[in-house]
Amino acid sequence: MPGLLRAGIFPKYTLVKGQPAQIECVEIGGQTFSISRGPLTVVALEDEWFNEVTDPILVIEELRHRTDFSPDLFTFCQRIPHIEPLYDFHREWESIAALSVDTYDHWWAKQIESATRNKIRKSQKAGIEVRECQFDDEFVRGMTSIFNETPIRQGRPFWHYGKDFETVKRQFSRFLFRESLIGAYCKNEMVGFAMLGDSGTFADLGQIISKLEHRDKAPTNALVAKCVELCATRGRRHLVYAYWLDGSLGDFKRQSGFEEVRLPRYYVPFTLTGKLALRNNLHHGLRQFLPKGLEDRLKLLRRSWLERRAQTKR
Image (tube, rainbow, N blue to C red; front, top):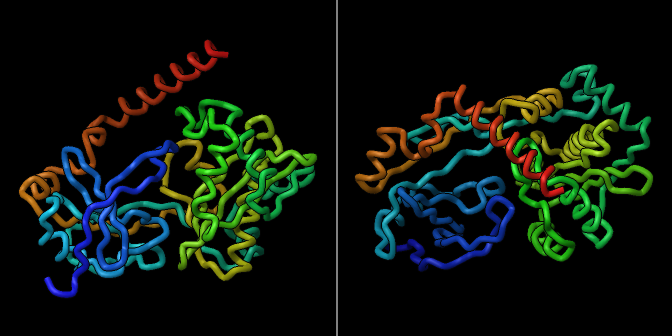
């Protein structure tokens, strides 16, 4: 195929669930795509939250004619604000949590409830100071302290628990060129922080976390408020906070003014295996077939077991 870039497969080091990992990648049309192997070999843009596939047709043609590996599926997703489907491929809907940003005053008066406003006022009265920061040793020490407060968050093993100063500094310095750092402080102690990424057309709240010890001071609410303020100041019309969820984290997103936005995700099969997986809805794995009630009970059992194990270790 003339004009198509046919680079070979190459390794790339990244983080998978908070841990260092090596993934396989391939470059097509000047963009890097990851290759996920398993029951299905799936190709996707390596950094979807911050980039968009510039030419899906070119990528599909390139993958169709490769000789160094045989992909079963290629998947890509449109990004906000482009929410209307643009392609005729197999399409599913992916729900993200997004906040439409006009002005800070509009968010304060119209998009959040009085309970959330009270929490932000409470954080100010409790002495929480929120400000933009530099990625220096003091900031990294604050991050490390927060990460190592507890091994369990949201009922799951916390990815970054147990990491030392050097590990945190190395792993979180990779994308500083596109991130703003925001710290929440109480009496000069960093009790929470957020990493606000610039995705070009929107801002991405990739990391936001606070110490449980200071939960009564609502530092996380104060961090979200600062992120909204920065978005409004910098002309970012949307703030994205990962996926739309149920549970306590989902409640927090809703109370902070985030809404569900459904984006079209496309799947293009190249093999019989890929076609059968799409036809039988197997490309999402077997977990999706668990009854909702059973899945919830299993989550509660996992949380109880993790908490008991943590208490035993302490």
